[in-house]
Length: 447
Image 1 (cartoon, one colour):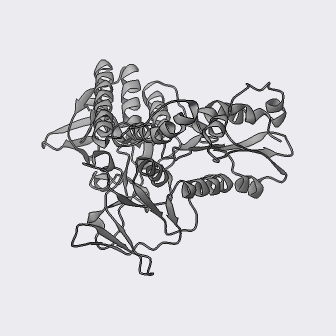
Image 2 (cartoon, rainbow, N blue to C red):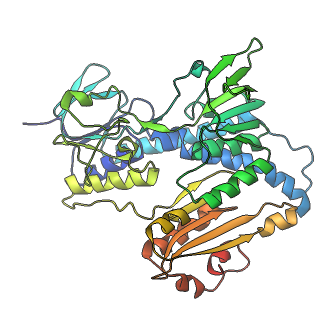
Image 3 (cartoon, rainbow, N blue to C red):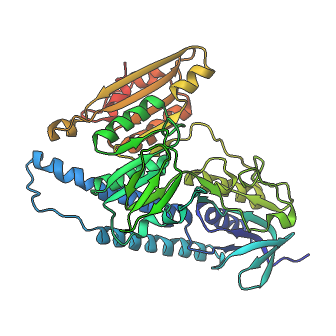
């Protein structure tokens, strides 16, 4: 049977774009469908605009600190529309580059929704149908919204970048990276932030000693953090304010509610049931190590599989898929020792096993720490301290985990993660001469 395309990708996010481009480089006839904007969550409404807001918000502290360094910053003001619109313009630029990349790779783009209509068959929103030998599902994930009365008054990370104006007060619901990042952003921009979570911990996948440090510093910066908060309802008041009800007498009046309670695979309405593609209880597409579903010719990569919801992982999965199916080079992804970061204020970053994980899986564990004040904070008069933590397998002396909180933690960890991935020992760190004066030198001076 002759097909219109060798590969049809549903979703032009990071994983889908990489898969399409690499498959085309292997000689495949490729098409991509995207119902919103090319670039996906990371570029359009995730990592990129979020990080730009982090940069913008941090100028509040930088300007305050500058006075101790001899700079007169009197009269400095902040204008939200300027930051919002400049970030949006950068997103527009990047979207154009993604489209250009696909065009240069001879990938046909359908800027409309696509669903699976049958084996090897895709139906587009305009009613037309195209056939493909292989179909790749790369639709990503979508923010969760709780099923509570008044949930329609809240927003998610999808809408937060387009606010007409900053609220005076904000309640952020969640305990993950999005919640903590926007708590830091809003707080620095002058918003009174209350961060609530129904559990008793934040950022469960990170080393809890580092997380406790973040919670303490966040509170010192003025963020009201409430654990064990049961979010029951949102009521709109006569004056337009929102009342967040907990049912426990600690209701919160606010101007904005941001839901950051997790992301679910974006599979509803894709037509997966038409061909019998298996999904798990959360709607994630079930795949094997080679990104294959249970249906021949249909694959999935990225957040829609709910394996590791990270942009670089989706990109690697998309690349491996294309090499495997079209490049005669079967490849799988190693999900061990993936570095991650939370761009809170201050940021935290980690790679490998946490202390708790190491103690649960290894017989002999050694932990090395450095609790210090960054040089800039000393002169700025800030009491805020950084914490670097190294987890070592006592039997082999291998460094199995690194966990940091402090300025530029993510930038520092990326290079250090190579050492963890390579299985280097604590002695290898000790043998490396310190780069002085820097924060990163603490990694080779840990005791």
